Image 1: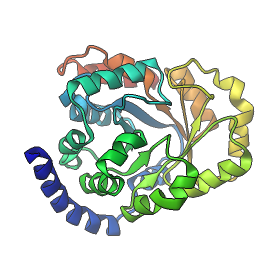
Image 2: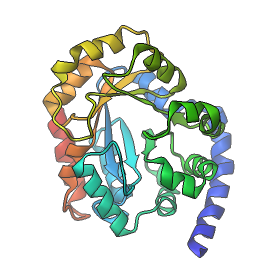
Image 3: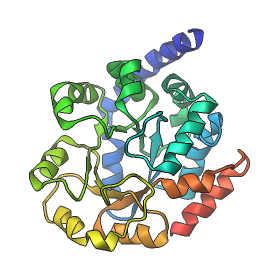
Image 4: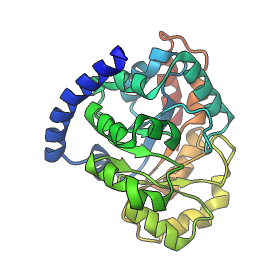
Length: 282
């Protein structure tokens, strides 16, 4: 209770400063896509993995290695879109003691070092328990740029939650799949800000995806005149798949392969492992 009260006090102070800043500056995500149109590398990892206090070390190492954006996963016991590797990292992170309050505590000063756009990716259940408006407020206060919540339906976003997300000036990213009808793609694109997340195949993360088999899908997205940039995710794991994804979209998201690169890493090993992994993609 004392820790949470302390977090709220710090967040209240940060929020007053962050709100002023937000009024004066464009979204970091929008700035990124205006500055760099192609080969955007967004890297996902699970907060609290491989160790509880690895989060900031990994973020700093990713920035030093030259990635463009960070997608920070909030571990959850029932992650519907995640494959076994990311599920396992989430289980380890939860066992390590990672929670939403703990994550915000870790992030309260991260903007002193990290300039990259940062999104939080997670699921609605723990956020609802935390309080959705509290969550949005606290995410903005520490300097988070946007949210990816795969189990937030479009209808609920329009009816209730989108207003709170917009109130706290957070970008929100919807996902589309090869089966998403064109009218729905356009609607999700209209509601999204930052970018649109194009799932490479209708499966969970980490599955092998032959991107060339989805050429028709990617070409369809390119031809639709979408307002948002597009990043391709699921099955992007190496230089070849990253380059292929970038030929169809503005960039790609890598998660499972990166989590594998961090498995069993000590705090001292993390920077070199990340440098080697990111270099292997270039």
